[in-house]
Length: 244
Image (tube, rainbow, N blue to C red):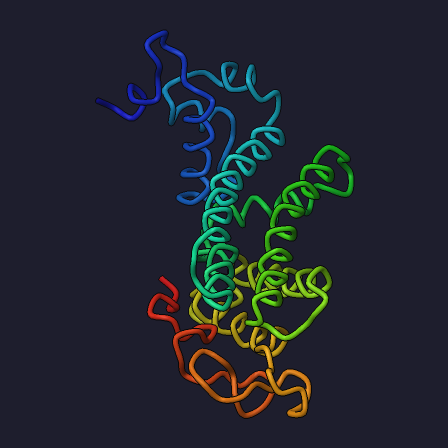
């Protein structure tokens, strides 16, 4: 069966989800500038008018595609938060979920495009805030949970989540714009891990050792703030910690 045929329901119409999926694929393959309603319609074997019927404009199509992509990631975040693994491992996997997978990452390409359009469009601004809120709330909950379980030293979870997300936004933008050496997401991941080790310090059972300095042992940082010891709980030292 052809791609166009697979995209159609029995009534001959292309589903909205298939339109969004194909839009994301087109952005990854050819870039956002090449995505037009007519080009997308041709890929799907339908008409531009059919796509406009559902989305109304290219801006709304892009926003819908971003929402669709973010909804899948929200499910992954919820699954991550519910897993019975250490807070350090959850935080490391959160970083990998957030960062782009390369310079052609379609989700991040859309984010950057919509950021540029937000100042003159209140609807886009509200949608951006809604999507950002989900990431912030989940990261805040992850950090607070780590503190409650004495994996992380006491911190202001809301403020630290904002700081980390701002850092991740900057790193992600550099990757998508091709400003990373070799255009590879792994350097950004390593920078993010380094920042986490500095900003989210391990719980210190002996308060006399000073703020953010934990006793040496498996899965905690020893030797001063931001220095991670080898162990099963350290950020970036898990078996699945390397970027894909």
